Every structure is written in structure tokens, then in C-alpha cells.
Length: 588
Image (cartoon, rainbow, N blue to C red; front, side, top):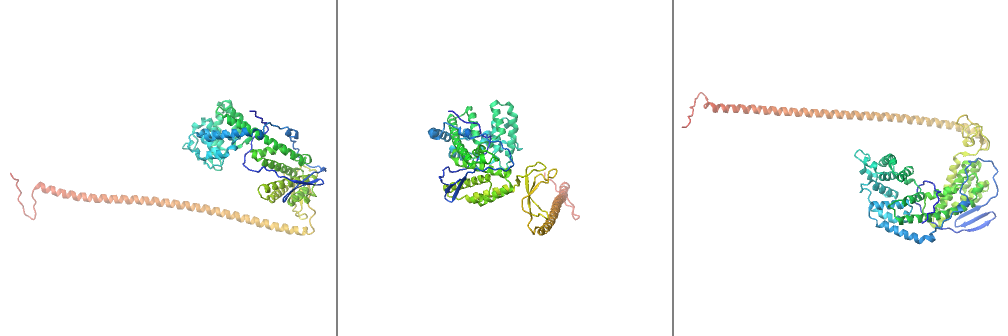
């Protein structure tokens, strides 16, 4: 099968699972002169064309033009389409589904799921993969590659799995076993798994350092293909890569794998080309929208980054069924980029204040006083927000227009308060950025002015322009009072800070004293414990001595009794009260 894939994608973007409906919304158009209104229930879509040109000399960031012109985008073609290849696609999906459900060996099954994810076809089998992974445990294997691969797949799919599964690969001192340093596949799998760590998982940080160290040491001993694979992973881990770029790269890698499944490989090629055909149609639609919007011709100060913004959206959500989400996200970022350049580069302060007020009012009358380039941008904002709100209320029955207006208002207010505006005359320091400041002097208290942003860097630049009118009549009287009150407040704040600092010092001293008291108490208890131990030993010795003395007395008494008895037996007679008893003669 032919694989038609241009190499024009950025290297890495994260994935995020969103779901959006892809139904279209019909609109009725009524023309009023140069303006065209699109009628929707509760929402108004407006568009406008203007021929005026802006003559003011403004700053320019000199952004380079886009290389993706209309002819190049319109030239994208492919022979693949879902209408033609739907039957073959369904047949391959059924074969791969059978392969997935019939595989029983855990290691083989995990390799298959990993290959499906990296080839970009796992979104066809989400339910089957979830069912298979429910009954698999990552802590029942002694193979580092399988354990790390299982851990990574479970973490990527949101299953609760603890990093303790790697404890079996560590020695008693908490370090990874040295014998693992020669297992290239295991180290690479451990390295990829370590990038799905959460805060506080020190074991995965140690796993990352251990795998990086040993993979770098083994790099020179590997063959060219393995070394290239390891080098690519060390530069950009799998978790950081954009799914469609990884699918394109892994198709070439998988083709050279001796254990490849030809059915899965054919499905990956066909699916990639079909999804790419969807991307091409979306790009053509967005290019036409971008051209009709007029930003490229009328807002020449802003960045023309349609393709880059679209690829950013593809990096976030690549599945073909979410076409509407990608298109909406690309439109949003393109308009937001123009607004950002308008506030940061091109707009003057009075114009930006009017634009901010118009966005907060959210009505067509609000743009009457805006310059031409702001009218184009204002119309685009209203059109996009009202279109999105109309789609949501039709598909889901929810009115989100209020929230969109609120968020747009917050964004332009924050952009206005960022403080970088274009000056209308030269600076002595050749700096092109002004900062909005407020005067605190007695004669111009509270009056705003634009001053050079380098007033604190090197020699002070005296350039400034007043923004507000001179102080109101009673301002000179109110300023001293306000300054005096501000001085009192600053003094009170200093006193409060000093008191707080004193209280903290006292609390620290009290804490130290309490710690010393606790230490002394602990020492006293230790001394008491030792004294009691000594007393117990002395008492024990006294009891032993008393027992020995008693035993000695008993021994002496028994010895005397024994001595008397022996004497009686030996001499045969005893004189008692002066009477001599006859001695018994032995019988013959």
C-alpha cells in the first residue's frame, strides 16, 4: 500500500481527549449595504468588508510572512477517502480486534497495545483495550521491560497504578539492581515510564536518572538502529511526542520489526492516509475562512500563522471525528493572535481603550468610533463567538454566549493593563516601548501618562506623553490631603510590619526556650531513669547479700548439729548430771 505523508508537522505536542459534535449549522443571510447579517435564534453573526487604509505610522514587529500560501494549501490532494476505502478499513479493524481479544500472553498483549498506540490506531479499539487492561496486574512479573511497559500504558489511560511496582527491582539500600544496567529494552521502557511520574514519586525520578545514565553508557555498544532509537527517546520521550508525528515515524520502524503483524501495519497505513485526507479538507476550509476574514491583507502588523495554529490543534486532538473542534480551536487562536499583536505592537492607548470598551458592550454600535483595523478584528470576534454559541445551543441546548463575552472582556482588559503601547514620537534612548504610569505629584495627582520603559535602566529617559486631561479644578486641594493620608497609611503599615516582625521574633525566642525546656526535661527524665536503675541494682545486691548471710547462718547451725552427732557416735557414752552410764557391749 502506498503511504502518502508529507513531513511538515512539528516535533512534539501533548494529547488531550476532547469530544465535539461535527454537525453544521445553516444560516440565512440578509444584506445591508456593505454589511451582512446572519440570523440565528438569540444570536447575531455579522461580517463586514472595508476598503479604507490605515495611514498612521505604527510600530512593527517585522514578523516573517507565512510560507503556506493559498496555492500551496489548495494543491494538497490524496487518492484516499472514507467513501472509497470504508469497506477495507472495517475489515482490517475487525481482524485487529480479533487479534487483540485472542492474545493471552501478557507480554505479547502489552507489546501489541503499545504498537497500536504508537501507530495511531488505538482510538478504534478504546473499549476493547479498556476491557483487556482491567484484568491485568503490573506487579506480577519479574521482567523490567514488561513491568515498565504495563505501568506506562495504565498511567496513560488513567488507571490507578502505584509506582511501588518497581520496588522489586531495587536492592535493600533502595538503589536499582546493578544487573539491570545491561538490559537495554528494560532500561528504555523504564525511562519512558518515568515520564508519567506524579509529584512526590521519588522512585520514578531515580528510575529516570538510573536509565539515562546506563543508556548513555550502552549507546556506543549498540547497533545503529538500536542506538538511533535510544537517542531519539532520550531527546524526546514518547509522552512528549505529537501522536500523528509519532505514528508516521513508527510506521517505518514497525515495518523493519521481525515480530510485526502485517494486518496491523496495513491498518496503520490506511488509517494514516485517511486521517490525512480529513486534515487536508479542514486546512482548505480554514484557508478560505482566513482569506475571507481579511486579516492577512488589512491587519498586516499581525502574525499570519494559520498552519502553525492548525497543527497546534491537531497536536491537542487528532481523531478524525473531532473535526469541528480542531477548526474552532484554530479560528480562536488565529483571532487571539491578532488581538495580542494589536495590544502589544500596533495599537495606541486611546484606540485600545475604545476597543476594550466595545468588547465589553458587545454590540455593533460600539464599533462606530473604532479605527478600520479594529473594526475588522471586532467583527471577527463577534462572528466567531456568536457562531460557537449558536452551535452549542443547537447541539447541546446550552447558552454559553454570556460566558464567552465575559472571558473575552477579561482577556482584553488584561491585555490593556499589560502596559506596552506604541509611542507617537521618538525617545532619546531609541526605545520603542512606553509604559502607562500615574502621576503622584501635587499639581498632577492621579493623572496618567506614557513614559519610557527604560526610565530605571541606565541613564533616565525624560520622554513622556500625558494621556489624561489636566487635573480637575479641586485636584490641587485634594492632592495634599491624599498624599498626607497616603503617608499616614504608609507609616501605619510600617508600624504594623515592625510589630509583626517583633511578634515573630518573640515567638521565635519562645519557641527556642520551649525547645530548651523540653531538652532539659528530657535530660532530667534520663537522669531519673538512670538513678532508678542504679537503685534497683543496689537493692538487688542487698537482697542477694542478705540471702547469702541467712544461708551462712543455716550452714553454721547445721554444721554444729552434725558435729555433735558425730561426737556422740564416736565416744559411745555421755556424762550427764554426774551419772556414768555403762557402755554397751557388742553382741557376740
